[in-house]
Length: 254
Image 1 (cartoon, helix red, strand yellow):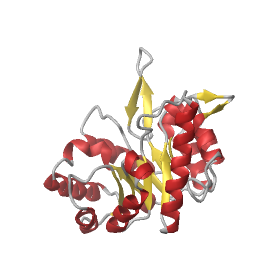
Image 2: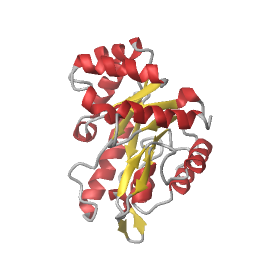
Image 3: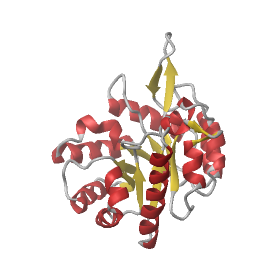
């Protein structure tokens, strides 16, 4: 992993990016902290081309974008067009919206939709990635839904954006899952957590929690990961200070 491969998911800074002015100011601070890239999660209502220019003017790259689940499944060509305006190639299906993983028909429709949408993106020279949470570790017939999704989609149509916190929360081993997805893991959500005295998980800065980050990153790098994306869903302090702590830790591993 190189420092230039470390990005930040802007969802972490969502309280600061609700307006165009806030979006631009936030990107400036992200670059000052030392990040080289961001993953988009909302662009303050800006046209994609304008948002992309703001990012580039701040001295940052866009590694990928979390796109509307409905748009991906129902109008993947619109996703292709949006990515083209951003000037990027990776779209992420971020959340299983309205999907009941205990319902075989729901799961089957999702898998078919992802494979079909991914084919549209592939023909345009782009890549669709699936971002997991803990839900996908629901077991059906002796295997997890996450495994089913990737077993029944073509690798050229669907790649993974593994979220290591949610893999662990679902009962999986993050390093092992990185190895399983070798060749299908361009993006990794790097986040950490601690456990409170009452047993509740609490998001933490990367390297300041309970996950074995060096082992996971080594497995991801071996699997061919291109981007290591810092995310902290909730922060106990200033989110900018939180992402700076995460970056400082990760830079120490480069």
